[in-house]
Image (spheres, helix red, strand yellow):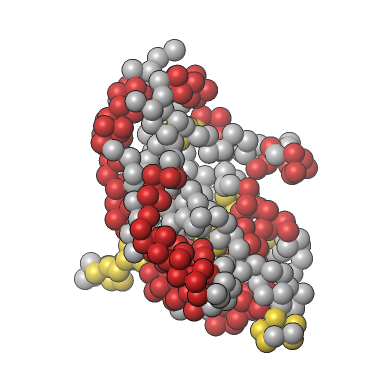
Length: 377
């Protein structure tokens, strides 16, 4: 049995008839950018996330970059201001900050959750801090009540990188006395959120695509203009903008797949539950994620990670490392090479992602568990 890490063809085939029909409608409709299909998806996704606005853009990195750029245009930030961000994130989170000539302030994650350690955030705040960027890494919610309290206490913008957590939820306690609570989705917890629809995401397009969600009227207006060459009216340019727009084909595909996102995420959760219960190898550590994680990635920690990866590959199981080099050790940020983030470095040295997706069969899950439990070195 060969078990691919993420067989996109199998995943797309689950809804192939509807996807082909949606693409056919766009092709025959003759309108390929900024049309009714895009408007429909934006409205559906905003409703799903629970925000007033969704602005479709070209990709997830652009979504992050445009949020920060819009805040600068609005006078909320200026060059040299600081943005707190997890040290172990995918590099796009940090690229968006430095592209806007803002300063990333790296904060270590918790080794238990792999998410930014909320106990370390407050000590990283300075008079130049303007925002906290949380990253819902691996599909797990990074938001905590403490992070919300800190952002309000210091009047900081709270930006979500929701590239890996479409459909993830967080339970908000509305009354400690009545024990009532409400459920909100990641992407609606802060002031603005960036979403990536890269094909491998839980909600993936057939190429690059992204979006920003927010309840802020002004922010939404500025981002939509910035992403359209800086224009809110044809041939009138208020900003030095860029071209970053989702196209009708991707919007059509995403609108089809959005209907199945919760069911697809539930299958990922079911697989993750089997992994958590079934993997009993003392050499391998399974994550302690919340029950609401959507498991975009199922990460293991193993001190002999490379040996485990080779062993699984030899036995037909595909794996991926997320990520082999932490941001502060990348060549593009060579000025940071002397910095020390031991928890981040441990995760990057030991992490191995195993298959976890909605098209995976129970037999494939069982085989993966059996192989991991038999691993030794």
